[in-house]
Image 1 (cartoon, rainbow, N blue to C red):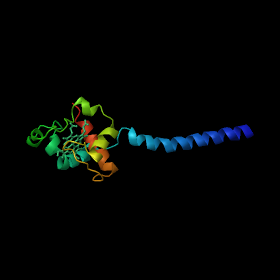
Image 2 (cartoon, helix red, strand yellow; image 1 turned 90 degrees about the horizontal axis):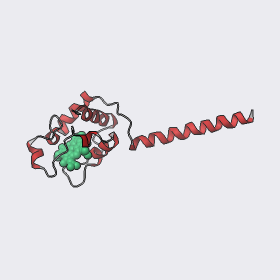
Image 3 (cartoon, protein in one colour; image 1 turned 60 degrees about the vertical axis):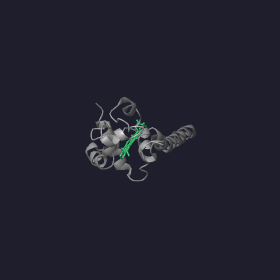
Image 4 (cartoon, rainbow, N blue to C red; image 1 turned 45 degrees about the horizontal axis):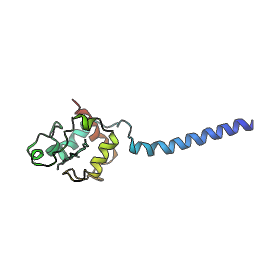
Length: 123
Ligand code: HEC
């Protein structure tokens, strides 16, 4: 009886620890986002396409004038990155490049939407 109680207590502590640890982990290793690519496309067309190109290939005149060139978002180098890494680049910018920090410009849903749109650019 007492043993069983301890076991269930341990189980509860385990469940609690996991529920605390998992959201923290997901900040670094974001799970596949549940963003809506169509919504993300609107944001992208407003804020990103002049550098990254309408199809993500960074084939605009502005892109050609920048050093380093904006990332080709369709390329494997970008697509193989985790959502959390893309999010970091968008929130914090990429130091030493024209990629500026968008900081709090997007809420979580908008961020998930933009990332979903980037994912949809995969060839
Ligand atoms: C002023 C031009 C400019 C704008 C606007 C811009 N970017 Fe960028 N972006 C860049 C440059 C330059 C890089 C860095 C390329 C490199 O790392 O060599 C970059 C890098 C990135 C990366 C990292 C790619 C990788 O593989 O590490 C992501 C993701 C990204 N941009 C997404 C976005 C999104 C989303 C928007 C719009 C909200 C946006 N960018 C707006 C120029 C821009």
